[in-house]
Image (cartoon, rainbow, N blue to C red; front, side, top):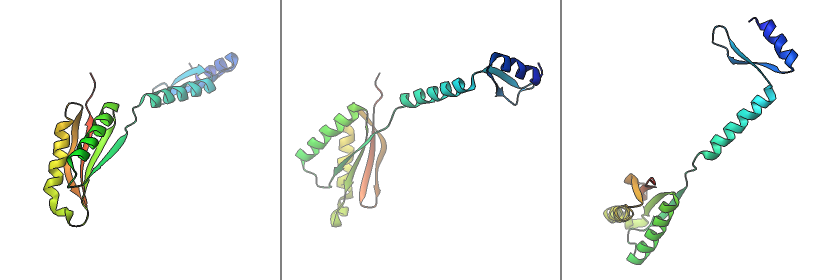
Length: 143
């Protein structure tokens, strides 16, 4: 059908002629209310955006010589965060000369990783970045 005829049909119906696919031969067009079409598209985009999961990252800070009680307290928080579905950035902060205890920091982070294994998994192994040794944990997928 020629373009002029399609335009005439659209005018008679009081609607708009919208190009769906320009590259097709002949081009694909549709007669519809353009404002309603835009409204529906916006609505679909909003729905897709609302269904997307937002990733929350919680931080837990340790020192290289963190006491057992403090460690247990922070581990409890880590478990709670993982059960809520948040990711965890656990790090050991080295102040001054405590950078000598890199191995202690790594042992502490690996201990945390093994103890929260049933609810979380290691996303990034401990690695030293400046004065911090960082490890990322993510919650396990629920079945």
